[in-house]
Figure (cartoon, rainbow, N blue to C red):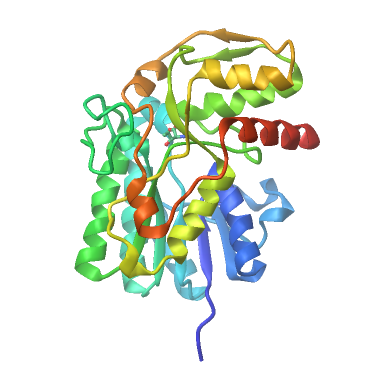
Length: 317
Ligand code: VAH
């Protein structure tokens, strides 16, 4: 009898994890998708159930969960993002790397069919092409977060080649969604700005007004993830991580788009250490390999994203 799919989403309370859990439960069914995160059960909302509290660095507990629930797919989203990682480099390396190695190792041991792990455009560095950075662009990251993602990509490729583990990955740009608060990323100004606009507060931006970065609406990122995971394995030429693109904009450009719908909204610029992180990244990426291998196409432009973010946050506030 065909075993039903049983998915484990690690980091399910995070910016990507929350929306990916909901999307997977729509595609499969609620009881097939177990949400796991370090948050205690009494701190999470009902939408996330069925839920297991899990510290992904507790390999024994992770192993017991994979074994007992007969997990067939793992989406490993737990990580420390770029800005927080610069402030806690050792803890970031441990969380981002040790957790991935545990997931890869246990996925081989328990014959997990597919694994998803998020990389980031942060794998690129100051010497990478700034515009339309290619799939094979130089990956010499200047941040701990970027170093952990670049190293993780090679571990994923190693486990695919040596053990045949079907692990797949996307180099997400900055992601903008309305269900989770900003989580310590350099691109998270582009999430926080909406919360200030909705509340009628002046927004202080920690990047300079002309700092262009690759960005994407969360709905596009979730769809890309599901489409990559649904693709036939033999279509995939990339087993490190696929460049994934949609938008590229500056703080000034997103502010001006928001101000069209929120007249009088004000912004103030006060760059900090995150400016240097942002300047080490490309301004846009070439994702033609993703389009070629699994027909990737974004659906949201800046105008459509701003309009949807403002309407969703207005309803939630
Ligand atoms: C960060 N949101 O800012 C993440 C992202 C491209 C950056 O990976 O750290």
